[in-house]
Length: 239
Image 1 (spheres, helix red, strand yellow):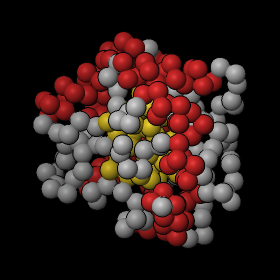
Image 2: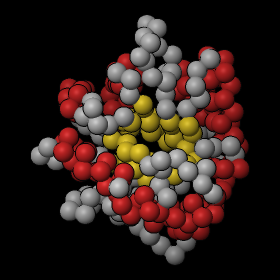
Image 3: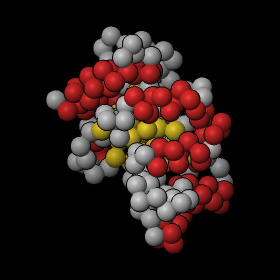
Image 4: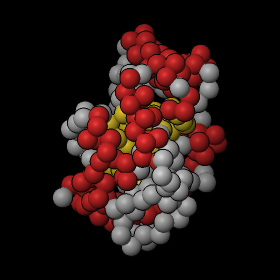
């Protein structure tokens, strides 16, 4: 099973804040999540800034549309792996998200498009993970069944893994095996605020449940010492 890793969510208002955070954590965080807020404001500029520093980018745009449109979007995302100036340090796009509610045909189109575009451009194919149920959603009687159904659909369609809360991670790991990737948002140190997340867990619990990637945002961004907060979470992951 892939060793658990930290992903820092760049959920910030502007590039200057993001640049400062990236620089502050340059020696401790390897993977950064670029979501709809930053990408809508800055587009490929923000991903290329990270890639030019050798950082891995998790592009979390949750593509969900008709199969052809999603396939085109995925091709464009894979194209972000090409350095605009042939920079040898430039890192290829590491991972991206699609939404599993789009259905099997859409997910298959995404997986196929990523494979074909990566081959055409001679770049490493990014991992594609399917969003199951957002961690802001309250738990109900059918939640676990829904998450597992969507995880199975993602694997059948050729995706590398899913995004799911810690509460479903152990079930997914048990049912879908050691090589299926699990990305877990809603990670909070024991003393952190829940904010708008409902299904959350500590790094230790997430690792024990089988998560491969632990997504953390505000507990690091809002910490008095961001570097210390990141190092503490990394320590808990590695222990």
